[in-house]
Length: 542
Image (cartoon, rainbow, N blue to C red):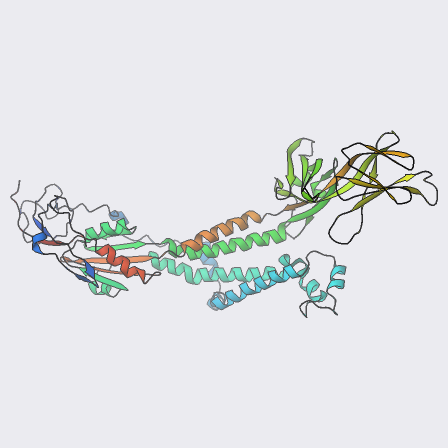
């Protein structure tokens, strides 16, 4: 408990001082006149609800101002609690649902079981290959070789597990979990918030002493207590000898926010599974494609937009390499044109750096080689189509063939060319023997079986994936709200009531969290309330 500092004259606003004598010329709480009093101030500390006073030798004379003006507490217009909110469509919707149904849906074990079921289905969706044709599942998930001992093509195709996240089973579990969250919010969380907001002054000291924490301050002012509570972040309401204060109301609203955030995430996920488009294409450098030609709907809510009429032109494809010769990065310089032929956007995309336009995202995902540009015996350059070759491992290998001699002969011979990337080409003669290596950028000729060949260029192809996902912003917003409301839900909602009973202030309080720390916090705040010990006399009126 702190005291007014020694040898310092101060003004203490406290209309609840119990004076033995009042000036006859002034009302008890007049703000127009000042009554000068001489008080003895003693320092006291509180432990387990008791107070100790310092020796009289340490008391000092103080000046006290009596008046009706309270410290900067809440205005009297805020003293009464707000009127109840009008019924909302949300409440009306659930009032039509039988109470037994709401009781079952709001059951916590049921909600936990629903979440575990959804998690198991998601895990199964990572095990079972998604989006493959039926023949793929017939061969890979046959009755003779079931996955996990029981999963065969029948389970996958009948239940829709080949498109797990848009299957009726998965979407049905999301709907059931959403219903459980809404029922829990309506039957449990909203009533708790209503109770927390429906506060009132407690006018009985016995009621206040029955709270989780209670204490009393002899010879203290309830307004001084209000000032201390306001300094500790409490919202304080004061009317006459009664006080009510609270802090952490956001902690009561946070569980509702958590439920709403989870609903938002599920809505976004459902919209992604039922309203998205996806597609992939490999385009040689210099060619075009229309977005709508490669996009396929992935749900019954998938509707094309005007962006699907946009044409994509691949201006240039290039690759970067490590010192070892391995491919490190590949890029595509692409332009977008509207139906009128006007360029609306241009960007160089690479892995992890996609292009976004009109709700469509274009990702750089793969690369290939489409053609070699060569010239023979000084003639004009021409293109040789390149085909991928099957080899073991994940290495890429491409090859082409340039006929030499009579192309109408039954056994056509020619020069073979192999390449792994755009850096170098390996050439073989008519007999299939190694003839040399050339880089496309060198433009150096090489003579093979009397044919002078120059490799002018290696034309690459860009592999891109395209996707529209209207649920992504909703899912991101839901996760952001979930993190925020989860943190807010740990805030303690603390309530304090106090009553001025003569010169004694009776205090009681409770909290929904941090129940071990709450008494210590209350004792620290009560120790800071000044103690008004005695009155030595009154000076003459001015």
